[in-house]
Image 1: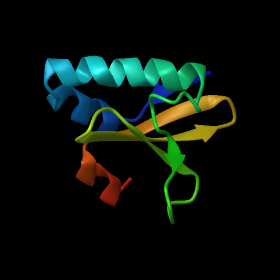
Image 2: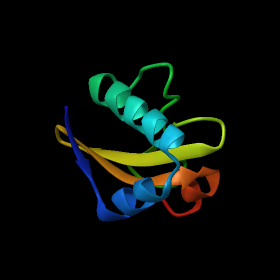
Image 3: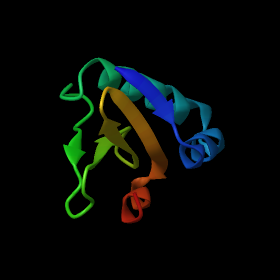
Length: 85
């Protein structure tokens, strides 16, 4: 699956500590290979249409959409990033 990153995701990613960035990269790779990979805990967000969320670690999440054969990563950060996916 092709991966694309929106500007908000890239800005938020750049502000994360190096250890968290490494975890984000690992999750993006897992998701690109298999959206149902058990380590990502990916699920559709309730009330957000076709936007998905996935875990980076206990405190961090990322949001994404699947449009045709492209996985578009929208936001990444602390758990509150889910308030406005």
